[in-house]
Length: 74
Image (cartoon, rainbow, N blue to C red; front, side):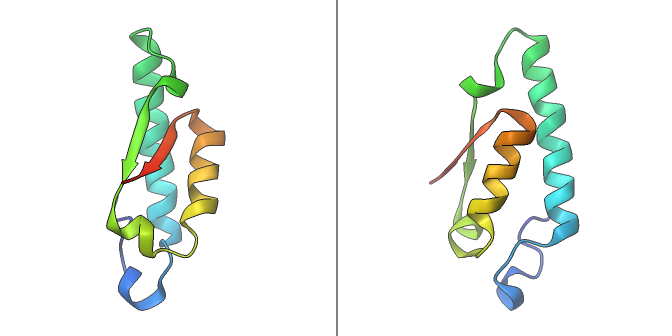
């Protein structure tokens, strides 16, 4: 989803990439549910870009609210 697009210049996640990521994770959460796995039992891992992006925390809250998935920075 190119979440790190232009991160080196702006230090924030790109809006279009954020939207694409939420869409992809929503689809993944639905797939989990179809197999009897509750999204709140799934951990999504985030790496270096998430430690750099100034809007990461707010974005991860948005992901959690939209999908039920938990995001953990590693």
